[in-house]
Length: 127
Image 1 (cartoon, rainbow, N blue to C red):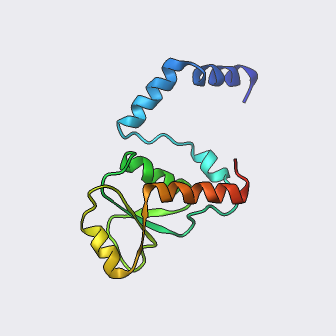
Image 2: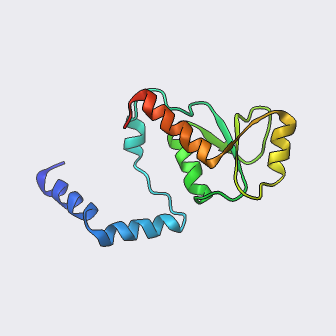
């Protein structure tokens, strides 16, 4: 990338109007990502190989939480099975919570998920 292009990119991302527009697009459900950045991530991620199921109402939109889990190496499923590692439980959970208990699948509150991520970053020194 040359000087002119890098200046243009920097200017774009430092303009408050552009940031607000990007935030508004994200709120509509549009997924904004940089595949080159994701591909460049090195090393083990905290949720590599883990499957999460989400139930109930959470503090953030479900699509944002699912994206966060994917960026950290995990994947999400729509139903609980013996292969599910965690069920993320929000307010007013549905039948997925009962299913998790029946199958002895670990359950997490949103705050516990965030704490898992923080602990991983602390241990990996990824501040």
